[in-house]
Length: 250
Image 1 (tube, helix red, strand yellow):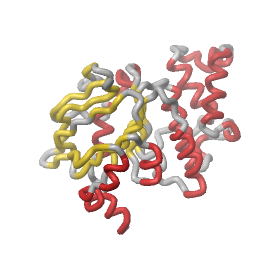
Image 2 (cartoon, helix red, strand yellow):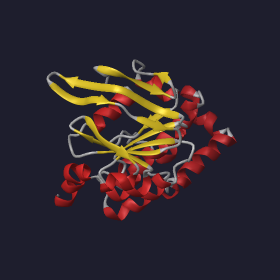
Image 3 (cartoon, one colour):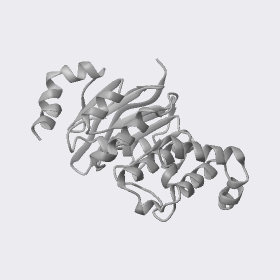
């Protein structure tokens, strides 16, 4: 088994509160792995630890075998890790075209001269156009991001993450807050993510989780409750009692 991402007894304490407790994950290369759990289970804390937004109290994080536990967030991006956020982190005054162009050009080292140089490089223009097409943004490519429907904004954020050319992508509730009418584009785009990119999905939408994931880890009170293939997790009485039962009764 070749691992893309691994945590070893990962812990995070905020004073007397334990947000992550001895979390050991093994995510195979190319996997579609979901991390689920009730509100307050510690899912976003784990993602913030993985991406360097938080420093762990204890434990280790390995990216393709390399210990990245103490590396800052930007160094993890350069090593091949990208993420989206529960709440969009976008450039509100830039268009999707400009936003994607900025990320692609920054990845290629164009720096302050990014727009002129990007426009002169056919391969860059082609990559931007492909990302706009893949994420259903071509029809709004020249609109300021701040005026786009929320579902489109979520697609912009996923497109920006993919523009980083990650080997490991963490999606933190990509469908959160998206109106039902706009969810289909999100689901389609997540399903169509490149197969060579390992994906860790954090999501409350069980339709999305069980249609996407080939393995699921259930987090409760900061610790792992159960892990396995979707069909096994769905049948597990502990999961039904602690998580799926909560959703059904919500």
